[in-house]
Length: 224
Image (cartoon, rainbow, N blue to C red):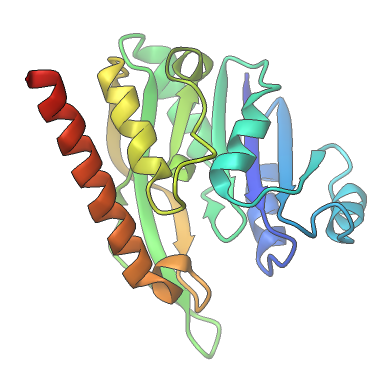
């Protein structure tokens, strides 16, 4: 009924936990596509480890970097009615897909089910320090109908790292895509020292400001 698509770099220390959270879903995926992306993806030993550890998963290697590239590649071979995404830093709760698929099957007027994300980090003793769950439109916290991407298209691989998600959702809203938000936690989002919003916060803000200006300029042009 659904495909799970994961984007990962070759140096992903938490990928096993992320993949196990897919494998342990109460409603199992029809297919799992793991896209290993980055300049060193082809020669990395990660692909061999993945094939040995998760032999039923489909492993794809891709030289270009970024989630948008990886997700676009995974979507190119999508054949199931629904699709969900996960980053290799994060993990799903066991009932995420069961709950979101039930929502979409029972609510035909909606195209996307969105749940709440719990940001967390690990303390020095291994315990989790969690933030309150919040509704998020991160791809990892949602389940999409295949028809959504047929109408909107895949994420733009050429969009800047910090703006591709905003740009895709804006395009989806303009296309009339309807989201069903439910404030139940479905995904844990790991906060660690290599998160791009921590290591490149200034660049992220700059890209978002430039994107907002671009959208405003385009709208003024349409209204003229």
